[in-house]
Structures are given as structure tokens and as C-alpha cells.
Amino acid sequence: IRRPPRSTPLYSSAASDVYKRQVITTMIGMFVAYIAVFIGSVISSLLLSTKEPKKENLQEIVQTLMANDDISLKIAIAVSAIIFAPLIEEVIFRGYIYPVIKRFSHPVFSCVITSLLFAVIHSNIEGLMPLFLLAIVLTIFYEVSKSIWVPILMHACFNGVNTISILLIKDAL
Image (cartoon, rainbow, N blue to C red; front, top):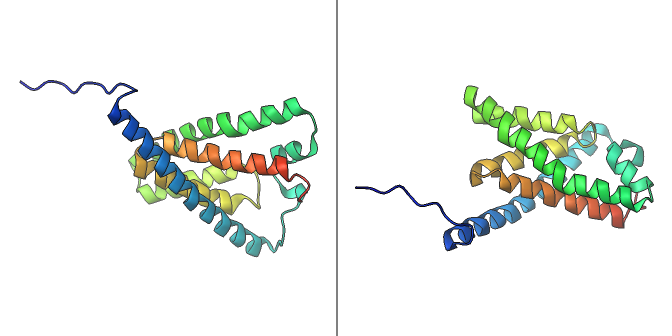
């Protein structure tokens, strides 16, 4: 008689290995993501004939973060960008839209459509190509890891690095 598999407790060695793999996959994914975003930024600059990003062309939330000195607003924006946005966006795009489209079409088509939607909702023409390529990387790492947590962590790290960079060098633009 075959017994059903026991659930893995959170503190077990097997669970620890899963978490380690997800963290390592996330770190590799971040490296790939930044390469993709860089390539997307170069393509965007060439297509739009822009040398440097201008403050007025940045996302509205980024402009607010840069222009405002209210610490509570900065904290609220940072928490939203680093925790809530990645969680909500990844559940919607990688957790729902991508698998639904993939069920009725080819995975590559699903990845492209989902990534395009992801880029478009950010309402930034200069960021369209970098965000599109970022979304493709997030989708690939979702598929590779078979876990929604990897793109959530990647997205959170990406937003975290960018938010901290904006806060530290807000006068750079």
C-alpha cells in the first residue's frame, strides 16, 4: 500500500532547499533583467532619438518621488513600489493573464502579449521597450522556476534598487 506524500514543513531541509533555489534563481534573474533593461533603454533611445531621460518624461510616480520632500509620502511610495506593486502586478500578469493566454495559444505568444500589456500599463513611452523586455525576463523566470515568487522577488528587487537610486541621486536628472 502506497502512502500519500507528507507535506513539507516550512522548517525542513527540503523546504530550505526550495527557498535557496528560489533566491539563487532570483539573483540570476536580476542579472538577466538588468541586461534586458539596459538593451531596452538603448533601443528606446535610438528609436525616440533621446540622449538622456528628462524629468518630464519619467513615470508620474517617479516625478512625485523626486519632487516631494514629505518623508511619509516617500515611505508610502517606496512601500507601494517595493512590496505592493510587485505582488499585485505579478499575480495579475504572470499568475493569471499569462497562463490563461498560454492555455489557448503558444507560450511565446502568451509571453509577448502579457509583456506588452505589462509595459503599456506603466504609461511611459520611454520605458515601454525596457519594461517590455523586463516583463519577458520575468515571464521566462516564472516558467523556469515554476513559482510565482521568483518574478515577485525579482520585481521587488528591481523596484527597490530603482527606488533607492532615485532617493539617493534625485538631482541627477
